[in-house]
Every structure is written in C-alpha cells, then in structure tokens.
Length: 344
Ligand code: 2NL
Image (cartoon, rainbow, N blue to C red):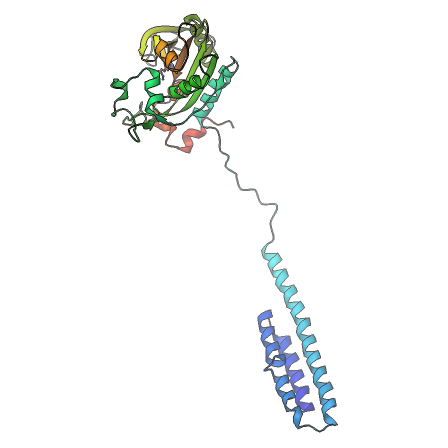
C-alpha cells in the first residue's frame, strides 16, 4: 500500500507538470484527490490493515495528498500567471496610433436662420413663444378671422386629424393663445417660430411641412409707421445695411390693412436680373395691422389697443440668402448639403 501511494504521488505530480491549462489541472485534481479519485480509492482499503500499520499509512496518505495538492497549487499559479500575461499582451493598446475621427453634429441651417431672427427681435424686447403643432380648428382658423366656409380652411389644404383637430397651417394660433391668456389688458411683444403643415404636393418650391416665424406687437397707439420701422430694421440687419424695403398692398384675413414687404435685390442692386425676375425687388414677408376682429376675439378692445403682425418663411429666406434651388433639400438630410452651413 505504501508503494501504491508513492507511485500515485509520482504519477500525479508528473501529470500536473504536463498540464497546459487550468481546466486540465482541475481534471487531474479530481482524478487523484476527488471523492472517487485514486488516493481515496486506496484509502478505502485501510480497513484491512493491522492496528500498527493504519497510522503509518494514514500519515503517508496525508503527506501524499498534501504533496499532490501543493504541486497542483503551484502549477495553478503558474498557469494563471501565464494566462494573465497572454491577455495583457492581447489587450495592449498602441498609444501612438492616430485617433479615429469623431463626427460632430451641427445646427441645421433653418435653426440657424430662426435663431438669428430670434436674437434680433429679443434685442427689440420681444419674447420667443412656442405652442402645439396639433391645433384646434378654433385657434388655427376661427380666432384669426377665418370663419367656417372660408376657402383657406378647405380640407384640401390642411391635414385634419379629426373634425376639430388639425396640424397647424401657420404659427399664428400661438399668438392668438398668448393674447387670450393676457385677459386683454397687457401689451404683447412676441415672435413664434415653428413647424407648420400644408396639404401640398412636394416640389422644388413647396413642402407639406416647412417653417414659419411670426411676430406680433400689440399695445396702445401701435401704428403702421411702427411696423414699417421694425421691418426696415429687420431687413437691414438680416440682409445688409444697404438694402431698401418697399411695402405693397396685399390681403390677409387676419390683418387690415395688409402689406407685403420686398427688399431691393442684392445681385443687381435694383437694375433687374434673373434672381429678382427683372423687377429689382424680392418678396420677403407678409404683414399688416392686426384685424380689429382678431383683437376682439382675443379679448382686446380694438378701440383701445392696436397692433401689427408679420409672418415669414425661414425656408424661403435661407433659399434666397444662400441661393438654394430646392426647398426639399432642408428636409431630406443629405449630410453633404447640411454640412455646408457648419463652421469649420
Ligand atoms: C406670410 C404672411 C402673416 C400674420 C402673418 C398674424 C397673426 C395674428 C394676428 C394677425 Cl395673431 N396676423 N400673422 C399677419 C400677416 C402676415 O404671414 O406670408 N407668411 C409666410
């Protein structure tokens, strides 16, 4: 039995030294020291030994076990060390490699235009206000003097969601809501930018969704000359101080009188060219004095309060400013187009 144990020790230590990974090592451990391992098997035969032999073999068995265990532990540490080194080598980072380029996003050109207009009017004491894109028929039309049956309310032109709800066709309802919330006894100076929706077929100059920015100034003694001065300042700041403006009579249901504003053509300085279609002037926005009915519906006494309003399309302004030929370019997200308006 003594010999058997010594042979097993030699055999086990030999096998341990031959293992190449932790898993094989564990198998050796089970094979010799486990509950059904060879050493355990030998010890089962101890019952047959004499009283004198038993402690001697018992001690030897313990030594053998300890020796095998020690060999396993040592080998395990070696293997683990080797595995760690292999992993570290695999994960080595070459800090001298050039970095991967990071793609930065940028502000959309329409957002830039809107922010430029906002900044200008904030400087004149206006507040920026936003409102819902899903509107009620009342605030989108009725409150703006577009009563039922008005041609602009045609189902053909708007995206109706229910009988009462539609995608707003302009940002004016934000202004109607704001006026309404002030109980008819506070002045209003506000601009409202945002997305608007029309049931149009998309082409180079039409999009079913585009942007609008409107302005509203309501107070006692607001006059047409205030509107003209404000628009002149806007045109010069936005398009250059050598620009002239001209107001032409026009019509909107929510203003009376109504005007359209042109700026003198920068390309030909008013002589006439293809950009201004030989007129020397380019149409920029619509405006007018707020219709007394609109003031009244919002809770303002039109005999005490007057106001002006204007509305323009940032899409059109960006197209004019940068010579963009197709409104759809703003919405089809070709990164090569959008990138042209980012700094560096
Ligand atoms: C255009 C013309 C305009 C307004 C918008 C307005 C709003 C209220 C009351 C009165 Cl709450 N008017 N907005 C007035 C005149 C013209 O927009 O051509 N937009 C692209």
